[in-house]
Image 1 (tube, helix red, strand yellow):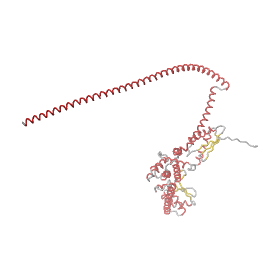
Image 2 (cartoon, rainbow, N blue to C red):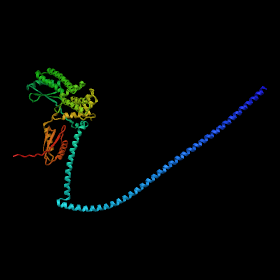
Image 3 (cartoon, rainbow, N blue to C red):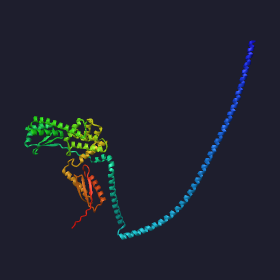
Image 4 (cartoon, rainbow, N blue to C red):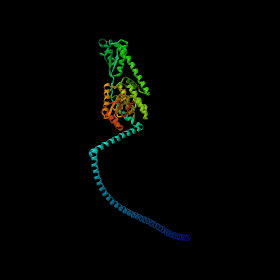
Length: 498
């Protein structure tokens, strides 16, 4: 019974739960349907609103486009009307121009007739044909053009002088190197005076033993000829020649000349020369302000004291180049110490060029490189005579300073004959031009002053004459440095009071 009752109670409870669950499910379904209907209605409303808004926007844009199209059509119509009016105006102008052109043709034909008549009358009155009149006119035009050209030349030169200070730093190192000189002449002999001609025999010695010992020891040639009271020492090595000169002078002063004494005096003279070379090199470096020069370079610099080129001492020339390069470097705001160092060392190759084959610039650069000089210094040395193209401003400055030192008046010696010929040629070039009255070569051929006839040349033609003479001198003469051409034109009124 308990089981049966329990079964029925359980069945009843289960059915009750199922019934409630079904009711709940139906209730949920109804609520879901209601919610779905509500969402559907809201979506429809929103879609209708959006469609309405889009339609309104489309209508607004359509109205704007229609308005814009109407405005464009209006402007196009206005432009068409304007073009029509312009076409009408152009047609009127074209008709006017055609009528004026016809009138001009008529006037032109009348002018040609008048011109022909006037030309005939002018030829009759002037007594000149058309060709002669044309030549006269061309001559006048040529004179006017020459006058204008001379004025233009003077204006250009004036502007160049005004701008020269501004541009000097850029062009000084390039322009001044044009006066570079390649001439080198060496002194290879020394003359030793003798107290009397008897000394020649003592120098030669018995069977020539003294002179042979002297030449073998010193390595120079001792020339004894008919020159009174003098002997000649000849050698390509200036240091060796100087040592031999001192040795011979000591022997002459001592009076005892024999092989042993010659050797003794030679060793003594050799030491003196070496000491002098070192002191001279140190003094040169001190004068320029160089304190860290290699001892080998100091010795080579001292040897330059005994070298000369065209009568110009190479050591003095090197010191002068160093000072000039330093001054120009300071003006150009570059390293003045570097320029001075390069200027002092630029000719060191001349001290050993008798021992090494090749140009002295390349020899000097190789020597400086071996003695640990900087690349800039070596390049300036090798480029100062053009064997190598200069790549630095210091190298160009050394070229310029070398040319200035070698080319200044009196720096180098030239033969009297060639000097006189150069001055005569200079004056003859100037006097070959029309209107020149007299010319004078001055300042050792560095300047020529030309007196012109004032009645034949005016001021503008004088300026052109100076330019022409300068160009001809450049083409026909060879000279160091530059030559100043001065043309002088003056009118003098002379009257005597009686």
